[in-house]
Image (cartoon, rainbow, N blue to C red; front, side):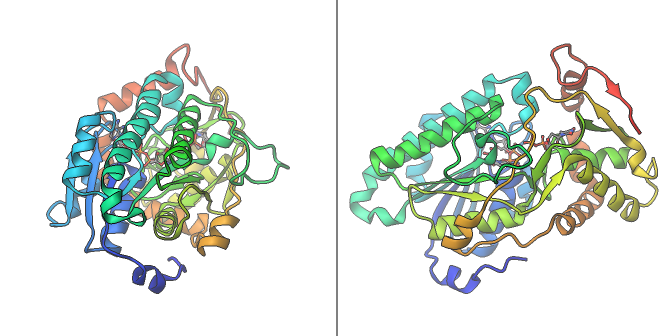
Length: 382
Ligand code: NAD
Ligand code: TYD
């Protein structure tokens, strides 16, 4: 799918020893698969706490591969992280571990501060000690610390505003985006203060296989398969810029191999779509591809619900810097990516069915029923 210069990338690659935090989550696990396939001689160590969003089934295919190791643990555990960096002689960190869902951050912001801010700080500190100890012996060039972040740190755009670029001022609006903004500033400060080779990426909304069914696209796919309402927040006119997860992984690969330490790169899919249009497209593809849907046409399930508090109106990424400097461009249109993703959810019921646990149901009751929740009532407007 990717048109990036594969030959030059693999020829410039030297064997790495990479620690991937959050590698059992959605993007992290896609990235682990990408990396293991592309660089089979690398040592790949995943550190993941296996919160509700972490799933070892995402990595099942790799469990017996000798170059791969999974460690269950918390990025806030400084001793564990330090020991792991040393014991595995890690030279590259790809940091994905985070609390990642805006709605959950509205209900429970504390865990976002803990993991996203304190956890990132703990990792940066451990890596600094590890890097400073080793740097005299093996040289600076060997090390990289990639901090994976979000475009949500830039706040909300009006319809006529230009897309976010790397110099757009930070203006986070949710506890989630504020916690990611804090961690971005720390990663940046470690480069400026200590010269540590950190790289930051800010990307738009991802979608694809292994996406936990609390985010818009997998939630809609699964609710259609179960014949449940499709809750669209507010008027459905909010815009997101959709990035296929495979495109995101190839961009991160480029940044690790060719990015300048201390730099930030925005990564986007060039796919701005209004939520309601996206949901209608999912319904249309599901009607075509999903035989025996409980409700057909699936659009009959669309239900407008009370808006998310502080709901950002529009995100859009200007990805010209990574295109110009690193030769990366997204390859997948939202229509192609959605078709692929929908097929995946149709054929992987065994993956998502067990995720609809009691905890999951309890979470949804909170979102839709609690007085301080996001949506107190359904307003059906078909
Ligand atoms: P996810 O919620 O699917 O996965 C997060 C993973 O981190 C899980 O496996 C979880 O178990 C693990 N984790 C959580 N807290 C941990 C802790 N304290 N210690 C160790 N592991 C912990 O998230 P995702 O969607 O894959 O996002 C990955 C990264 O990309 C995050 O940093 C997120 O902010 C960023 N991002 C995501 C999107 C998106 O659209 N999903 C967009 C932009 C940026
Ligand atoms: P989401 O997948 O939660 O990502 P983010 O909030 O990080 O952008 O939501 C994407 C968009 O879809 C966002 O505008 C909120 C909206 N949305 C709904 O309308 N209904 C839903 O059930 C969910 C989860 C999201």
